[in-house]
Image (tube, rainbow over all chains, first blue to last red; front, side):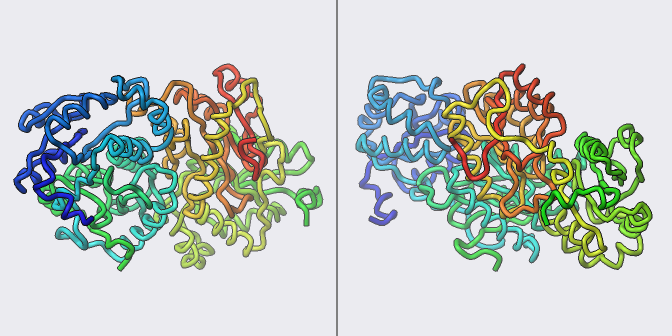
Length: 292
Length: 292
């Protein structure tokens, strides 16, 4: 079945389980523009209350699988999208309802691994409950970052070589289910993202440069983000936005590169505007073709 | 030629090019206990002046290759050891003398890559100048971390599994010449060291735990350090010490594991004392055998 069949109107309302950031609302807006109803299941603590209020919604927490199933069925939702920024909960933080409690051994297993493992496990549970899990980019393809040089500034040959090295490193670390981002400058790996997330990784580079602990020329280095190899692309595609540009500029990088069609953004125009103003390039890497 | 032949007294005085930290002086003391003269070439900005004063020494900077060659020859040194903590200089910081200037194209090449690449290149230049580059552990084997459980506390089965995962990750990232350390907790990769160094990586974990951005039970996770695969072991073996234990305790880890015989320490007894007091294990991983 093609993804265009997934999103046809006849599939009924779409349930969006939403974490933090602005991307869940961009997805909801895109879905509603297609004439499809979107129902938000907002994760308490992550989703932004002011934004959530603008849509049909329910507040929920981790572990309320029975409640989610009941409400989503009442709403007529068969399709589910999981989207938005999420700090991994501990298993102790999960408030269990009865359905979830029955799934406990399986939940304990999905908690033992990286984020991708956790989300994949959660998606599997949803599917076994009769839902169909779709990628946010399948219902709202406009959030995908396109290919090539996307703003006014272009990557240099050296930047392209750094991007190539970064993509190879991400391919090597992928099986370990760690972060989806690295920074490479002049062939040197400056930083590797794990649990801290992209923004904090970039803040560290800015700090180390300030302390002269990283001695690289200013305005050098590339932030590269890409999905892990073998990653379930329906969940957890890497995302960038204006805030990423700000953090990359503060770290004095030359630019940002992401896998075209394998990364999402909520605010494409604002992001490019910010990059143009800061003198940074934003580059969509063609899948499987780096350094061209 | 075996390493024991390398260190025989008849080889003349040993030149020690020394960076920061206390390990250069432990090596110098060990060499002198063997009845061999040690001459320090202290890198200005990195070596500790108070410590350097206690030994025959010259102050030097990067790029004074001609001066080093002249002085080392006058001292009768054929063997050279490079040891101590060093923040990578930029090529602009190198003050060039004439000999170094002639080597410039080669030096530019060694600067384009990770630290191992840089040090290997520097060692190659020394050898072409007629010196013999030895590993600090070849002249002072007592600095090598031994095998097994080294203090009062032992790694659990889960810790050993985390160590195993960390060693596999380090093997995968090794070809990219990045840091030699990672932290794994309950099968999840918490942090990967690149240019920030081990202490700052551990400080980040402490901070993220404080901010509840990493939600792991306290006193879990293992810091694992190992040489990169294919690394020239004469230079830049990973090191640990009491400060590492302090930083690991502040990050609320369960322990520290390093490759036995492939990692060095300046203060073994102090380190174990600190680990015992903090409730951390220190474990020497047998090379090629993890998780036993």
